[in-house]
Image (tube, rainbow, N blue to C red; front, top):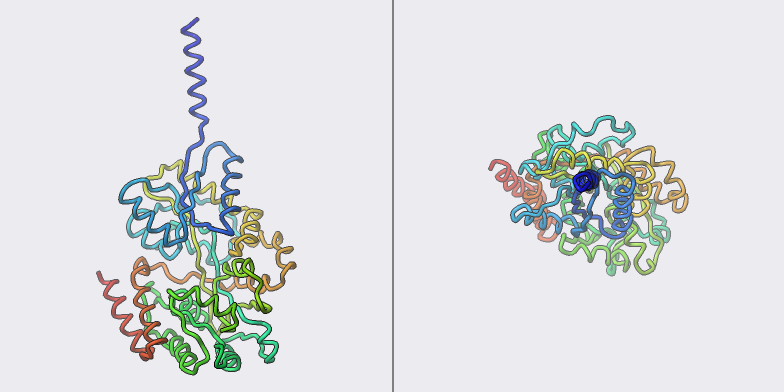
Length: 401
């Protein structure tokens, strides 16, 4: 009798252990306003099935999370799944800490927007599962535009003309940011690229040089305020305090701006001005499965991503964060969102012209050379070509190591 009872207890314990879901730790960077809906979707995924349990841990912004990951990789305690900024994906692959995922991605829906899944690829293989992609948008002071009868610019020559009309001793027409994200947006929108066909830096390409010369001319004329990356917070303050009237910014900053104190003017939102061959760059983050994960953990990570890519969850995520809808099938669920504020439809229409821009593993090193060149040109009056040639030499030296 005792023998049978012992066997029964053993079987019950075995069943209990077998039914315990496989845990997958996730370090994510979805801060407010996205943290609450993101972690709610994690909880819903865990409740909807019994195989896997995602354990989310917020790690701050992309930079903070990246530093924490490096420390964890050295000391131990790294997660299974990491929410990485897509420009760092190439470096993660090069260092051997990201796992390829293609064999787990069969039968994907065919309605992802062009280029969106490409942001998670490196050298033809998928290492990142994009969950939050954004584009720049063109913010402007609609009251000032109306008062001066200025049309919303659709190309950069019109931006320069508007900046001249809007500038005075007390305010500048345009905010110019000397960071890689802002400059790349300008270059791509003018039909150029910071990287060549081999994915290497190409700072001396005519389109790149012309773009910096364009900015330098506006700044020198007194029609634009130049801000570097350390002064980014002042750019928003300049705009909200009517010290400047136009500027590019990520679409995801929009809900943060409108959640602040009432804006003292009507906020204008438009698509990025484009010239022939121009594109709008994609930025954002992707889920990356780290080296050491078991095949079952990889399956669980992909299953979680597929859950996030369901149209209802995409729509919910878009409404909270203003990240782009990943799939066309989510658009009908966003109609009320667009009707509530028609400016949103204009901004989100850029999904059709969005494109990835760089997968170079060394981008995390050479972008600082470019930002130094922008600073020297826009604040130090160094000729654009000279500053970019110096940055190109430094970047090439990194690539050759």
